[in-house]
Length: 335
Ligand code: PBG
Image (tube, rainbow, N blue to C red):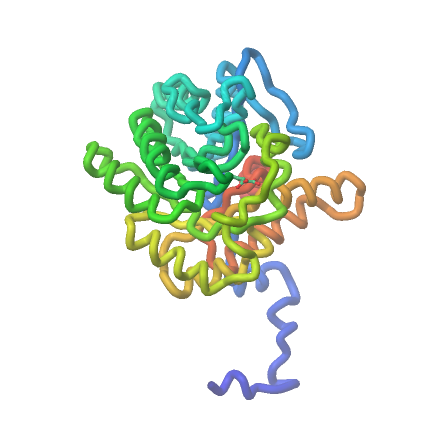
């Protein structure tokens, strides 16, 4: 291609960078509010809007105050929120049975929000870690391993319960084998044909989840890592195989998690499958930016806009980020 043979001075790339208007015209990617998904933590009790210590600016809301967050999401035209429960320890057990309680926090929140008929999608995780005393995403067998098929049985029930409560997107984040197909079949045969299934298809065993485990209260319970079910961060071909399986099993959307260290995975998946691909900028990524910004070492807004635009450049269609509300406000204020 001839353009590769242009040379100086006929080609001066800086001509196209000399002012904002021309930079705008040649810009290849941009970030809009339509790209943002906002995760929200909920907790037991009344009149609570507590800080999450390791995530400055992030709060846990009791159900009676959840509308404060919902209103902000709506006002700022956020399309989708993801709800995560901080279940009190006394409601946790070995098998995470609270996940199947129709009066658990997530079901209560769904009832509360869904009766308002808002133009706002609600996504709910499928996994047992907010409900188990050991903090793992599935059921432990006698020798302390996560039993795949036994876990799937519970995850299918959890999914049906969420669908009954009108969750718009059901998002299995547990990384059990075969669960997407089982959940999809269960949804189909129970007349939940329109429920969207987002698979955390490429979810890595990561050190970046620490603050989240704090926020949902699983950190102190978790005594072992999740490497027998979450992926090895050394691997990339494996992500292709995971995603191929989940798409064939009936996933509507796929997610890569964590975010910034995994932009290569997003790009490979997008190129290979041309499928809606979401990215999760996780709690540890958020905490790192916040901590450095609080020390005056970086400019938070600049860094976050750069990071979120990098997700777009890599090929992400949407980004789940704890910065969603702040960035939506920023984008809305200038457009
Ligand atoms: C667990 C789950 C995790 C996150 C979302 N769902 C943590 C984990 O796998 O241990 C992490 C999100 C974050 O760090 O922001 N099912």
